[in-house]
Length: 225
Ligand SMILES: Nc1ncnc2c1ncn2[C@@H]1O[C@H](COP(=O)(O)OP(=O)(O)OP(=O)(O)O)[C@@H](O)[C@H]1O
Image (cartoon, rainbow, N blue to C red; front, side):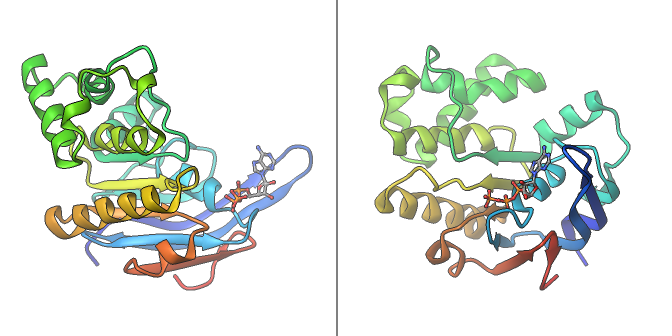
């Protein structure tokens, strides 16, 4: 299978306050250009799984592959680079730096990667903002724009290094229905026009049922791998 992301037999326990087997033998993959969602009751383990898949949490057993490369066992420094290059992440909260301009916020992950000149990064950041129809906000301070606009800036920032997969943890959780629809359409266009893979944790059934696949979680297991 041509998976951009593959989890094999992932298990995780929390040890405090008492032992809790939060993820049980998670095996599944996300294909290139696939737009998948993870749904399940509160506490079923969705966010815990997503943080492992995004390489932010390394405290698990099993194996995780990104673009066919085993990432389990790499150092934090190696993972930080792999993540910055390959994974875009959109949270429920935008986490923009409020004192910085919209453009500077979008440029940050590319500056950290340091593979391009500043002029090239600025050009790419403007192109991402324009693609999301917010090019006119480039010089605004991030604190001065609306909630829906902030989330679009966060998406532009997640795309700046041209990741292979975009992950989201409740990316529409703070948005009204109009802005949620906007985010859905942006994600769908990224899949259709750029072949991007997307994996989104959501409680929004209307959002999930219009994606390629709903991965159902219950008690730390995937019911339909
Ligand atoms: N650091 C931790 N220590 C112990 N238990 C934890 C810890 N973090 C999460 N849990 C527990 O693990 C379970 C799964 O949590 P997780 O946040 O992954 O669920 P979720 O499906 O994303 O829920 P929600 O839909 O409410 O966000 C929950 O029962 C939670 O209480």
